[in-house]
Length: 301
Image (cartoon, rainbow, N blue to C red; front, side, top):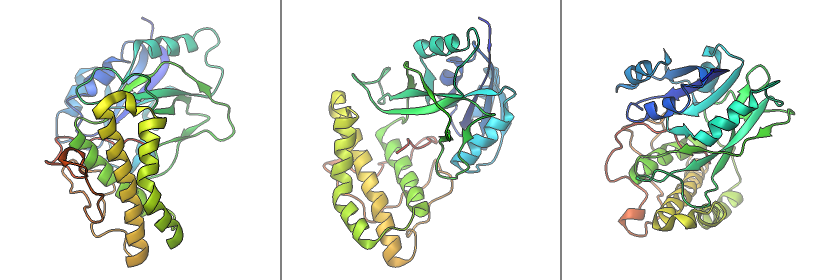
């Protein structure tokens, strides 16, 4: 298979147990795979190098800044961004290859579906509808946002194409991992959020959980995932309520939280626990029963 004039870049930390699957989904058909490792303490660097990647070590800069640094390491103008928990499906691979045939891509960037896979499953739930992100693009025209919190591509006024086949997103190893990373990410969001009035925050404290439960369980169709889908939706909704609680406490106490969130989610960090949402049984509680075994980048809001 002839390699496309395309660089794939992956940012990673402590992803030795799953980064090989991500790399293997693209390595045979892209020109290069660049892994930017933020000082892993496991075998991530060794695994990535053994899979034929070029590995660059860079201390954590922030979500957007780390991806901008990774863009700069790529030798091709066209880049494909994957996280270490995402896998390109054969259908998406074929769609991207077809895009580069003939005169090449017609647009400067393309969004693609990312479909969540629950722990222990191999494929997404029925009728999955999770996220669409710009991940394939010409870095001469568009780039990731220069932000420590948000990792999205700024497309400006450029028209963006759309790919139909999905990548699979193995976002969390367990529900405890999901709780841990959301606790850290929501605290980070709250710390960098614009200040809202007390009235708006009070209203959000009331509606945030039910509104997000409806969004995840119904709109994003996690009801097709059965009990796993309900559990996932409840955890997401609860932590979005927790983010607003962080903002409420910051406005009324003058501090962002009683435990300042780290600039980069830490694999063994302690989640902020004040103002937590009520649990409906231990399996649906907010807090992990045990520390996670590895780092996971938080799923986007």
